[in-house]
Length: 350
Image (tube, rainbow, N blue to C red; front, side, top):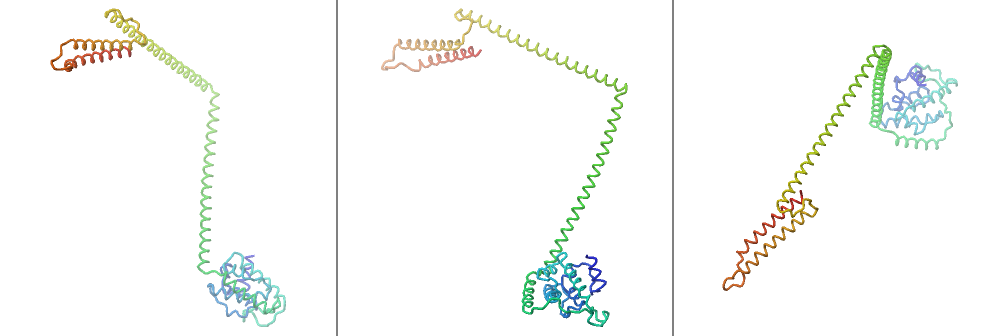
């Protein structure tokens, strides 16, 4: 349909501007007024403004509204706003309805003998298809103008939307190009993998064919024999290591037992030399008994030294004995007790 409309606009009507982009070229409404003027229906075409500003769009579409209403073409504020804001297919749909109306009017006889070359206007009758309703039509026209002023957008806003759409299209193209590149890389990688798989399968096939040869069987037998010898060697080596560890453990155990026997014999000889009062077999409480004996001997010595001191004569004029004489004896007794305690502890630990 777009090609038919462009042919009708550029070759049949021969507008003042060569139409290439329908949405952008008809956004101002000036070319729509020119088309209706060529069809002998827009007599106030001189009032149209050839500009893309918001005021020019409002003026042009307000002038178009009565003409399109007389042709019985549906044209309201929403359609006008869509065309002014360059919505897709909005202008094309209106042009298609104008072309259908022009074809319908063209079936009637001409109303003038003036040629198209002199006036540029096709001599069609301009009687309204729809009956006029003055009060109703004027009120609708006022509401139409009010709605159009609310919906019209500025040039900067339209340019921003165009830039946004252009940017989205650019990003989409870049994304598609990147996806195509990745697809090519994946296909190349897939082809390379298939080639490698083919080479690998060919190699395996050749290897399987070689396994049936006598040389392959002989080499396999040699490999098995070599692995068996290696396993036997490692098994023998591990056995020798286990035997060496066991012999070392036995020798250490014997040495420790001999040392213990020597220690016991030495203790027995010492006890027999001291008088044979202490049994060679040491009980659990041996160390405690030795400690008790040492402490008892120390207390006896203390008593003995105290009794001797009491038997001695005292100094004249004093009721207590001299302390410095007995302090030395007490220190000797304490040292002997400590030595006996340490010896008993060492014997208990051993």
